[in-house]
Length: 310
Image 1 (cartoon, rainbow, N blue to C red):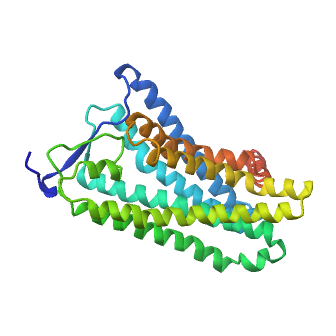
Image 2: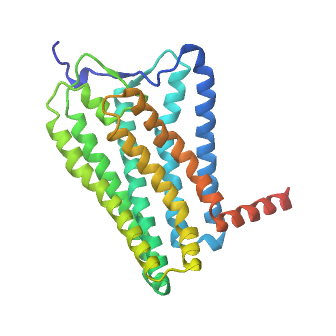
Image 3: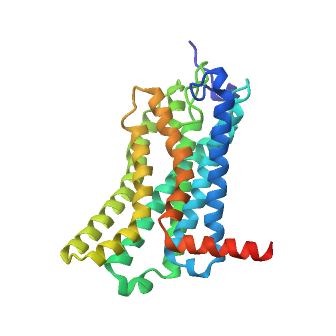
């Protein structure tokens, strides 16, 4: 089959999730409900952090950006998936596909960097409590967040530019519900060795570095706590880190399920993808609100304020 130039490829076909025709209505309702919960939950977290002065601390500053990133990540994939479920036209334009790929890589990477920044913040809070305010100053916090955004944008731009130089064959069927980079590379008739090299080298480094930061931070926290063990110290450490640890486990567990344990099982890869593009962003606000006393108090005050003006 003769390859077609990428300029002649105007759209791609998204196969989506393997759902029976009679079950489409149920899944549309399910995913739409999950998406609305994600948007409202993360917006509520951002709103509470902005309104309550007690939450104007480095940890909640990082959390507000994580909530924004989660909400954006879900918005990149879920609306298009829901539209395709209730429509016979399951195509996405070439420009739309490339745009979706760019923002998907951006927000996945941003989540990765922000989780590492939050782990470092927890390390400073527990291991250097007396110097916490001196170390985690506003300037450093802004620098860490802006640096995360910049690196994520450049990372996404590199892989997007490397992809648009490729030619695609006549088969334009993407075996996924969004424009995933690995699915798109399978459709290319060009040499993808440079793309794969960048994924393993640049992409691997940018994911292993934050993961190493997270592991290093918690290993150091565990070492400090076990050096002088006490019930009070253990309880404080658990209350401080439990929410972040839960989110980290959920994020990296599903990410590992996609890219390391589902190479030959497309259905399992789709399930894992749904977990970290739909389920994880939805659960994060609940994890932080249910396990966090400050968020609970801010929510209670917001409810009282709303009832007062009602």
